[in-house]
Length: 268
Image 1 (cartoon, rainbow, N blue to C red):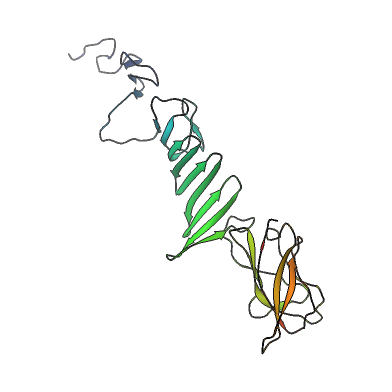
Image 2: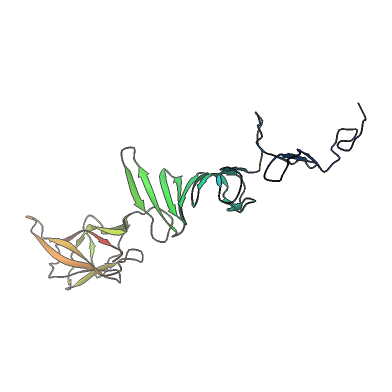
């Protein structure tokens, strides 16, 4: 009847009571409740069609409680969220299995086993693998034929490339500059060809490699001196010192070339 007023709704149909609920309603456990403010809590609800705007969707294995959150869909900028039972969850779409979880957020995929997460994103055609607990990362290049691992440039969050050395003691390039590059297995590759300078000494320091490319201990490498046609070759012992110096030993002939193709580990 129009205009009929009662304890639940007034004559205009507005809810007067603080809330209405089922007889078995227990917060976060059973039943349903519709509050005057418009908040609905329901157990075992079926909703057809429509859309969800904002908020979070939390899924549990069995009765909601500590330790049995298995999936979440959440928005917002807060990096770590907590449900009413103390379970941690994250913005994005995530699934959980104990201390392990996997999730999508923005353009990235996060995988974590225990306390060590991996984060995967695609950047400029490269798959970026980040290790937040160490601050390091790797890149994977997909040429359509094969995938190639690329290291992170030391001290910079960019893919590693070849770097030309700064020569010392009048050493110069002979066609192919002496270059160095950090490899994904934590080794450094050296490659190039140089002119042996006039007045070369024994030993002779060719260059000094920068921090991030210096080994924990002195590492031996071998280089080859070429005398030109008929290309008689002489092997020389060389080493990369803990100072970063590349030092070549042995009697060398000025005007000949010295070829370097070597790889050494950074960790002892």
